[in-house]
Amino acid sequence: MRRVLVAGNWKMHKTPSEARVWFAELKRLLPPLDSEAVVLPAYPMLPAAKEVLSGTEVAYGAQDVSPHREGAYTGEVSARMLSDLGCRYAIVGHSERRRYHGETDALVAEKAKRLLEEGIVPILCVGEPLEVREKGEAEAYTLRQLLGSLDGVEPSAPERLVIAYEPVWAIGTGKNATPEDAEAMHRAIRKALSERYGEAFAQRVRILYGGSVNPKNFAHLLSMPNVDGGLVGGASLELESFLALLRIAG
Ligand code: PGA
Image (cartoon, rainbow, N blue to C red; front, side):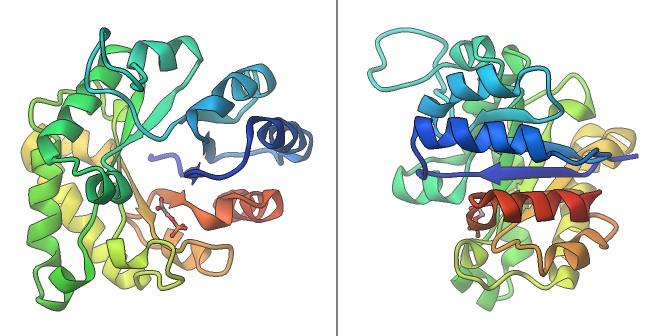
């Protein structure tokens, strides 16, 4: 009932020329998919994504968006611009934005609202740092972040929202959460979504796991009933590895 989603978060890697070649190769080698593939490159790669990937099974999107609609906001990129470029998804609230740019839950919620206004699906990230997990407070912390980041966010349908659980200590470290720990958190997130949006809605929202996902651990993570896909950094950069993840997702 929930279509598996494999989203590649390229972060600040590759150039537009490199991306163009990568997209073309992906298009050439793409297996038939039941799951959904999404590439999330940095802004300057989006025109190439539009040119090469439009009309294919692969969706693309951005890693962030401005909380403002338009105006004198130097350096910002609006949801309307992303929509014009054909973005179907955009990440908001990634832990690297929260940590290095001081993004608060309230700001993340504003960004999610701007995306929804333009018909773009927010991939809203939450997850606890190591010290919080060690204190046994991971769930309370993550759910507080989730509800804070969804304040005033009203998607018109469950397909219009994706949540990514990304424990900060698992990102880029090679230490993924155990599938069982991920499942426990995903279940708690779905329960919170059910209290927030109703049970029918919560049952259809996709919850991705992120943090050192790779072709070796992905199948086990995906076997968990509440893990609906992956938000993948490092292992999405090499085409072979991204294709391997797609084959695992089916
Ligand atoms: P990673 O990054 O797969 O390299 O750990 C995941 C993410 O930050 O989205």
